[in-house]
Image (cartoon, rainbow, N blue to C red; front, side, top):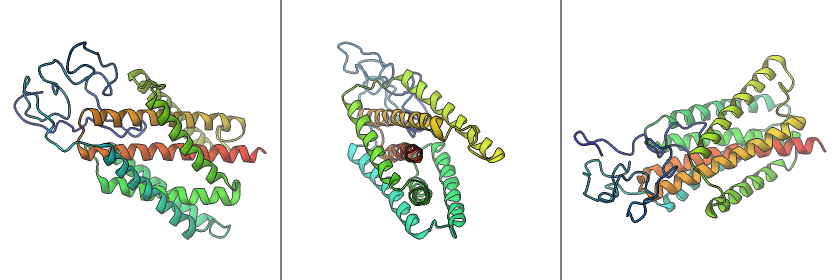
Length: 305
């Protein structure tokens, strides 16, 4: 750790795990914590990418006390994050999404007479949610009120969209999309716990690059659709729509693996308790992504029947 002026060591060290909205991570010079970590046989700090030697297991650990000197092993001064903290914050954030989605479903009708007004509210809520997500991703630490407000606006958007799809496009698609999202979450969690998925620096770089490319391609498709009408480049309908829907779900599964890795690293290296809000924020972003891709995929498949 550097000597002299003390600093908060966890600032800019953990990130929202969704690479599309995030710029921070459990990283210094070697990527996300645990990525490319060198095991040192016989060392009490083996596998800790933040440790530089056996003399101090907290050396270069971003969550160690700011005034820790080399050779003086001390526990982190802050209250560390636990798995219960992550579960509780995630339940609060996702619960906010679900509650506001249900309210929007029942209070904002999507019949032909009110569809335009409800659509306007949904689009406005989506834009506000996106702005709030971006603001939080560039914050140096989590802001619970900001995260919960994002969740509320995201829920309004999802409620109107889900009601519209269920009423006018594909009855039953919402239930199938929810079950599909839960299945992906459970499958990735099992695969991660069994170490069938190896989350390393190369994996993170590939997922980030793929996500940026996917989002840019979808943005171009939307722009063409707005300017020229129709389905744009046709990437969200028909056979191409099914293909890109599957790719979107696979990307969401990769996001989940990154989420689980960052939570695991936060628990291992003693992240501050407040960082559990970032874990909840990242998981919520990822689950919303997967649900939207699932909803679109189910809608296309039902429409092709």
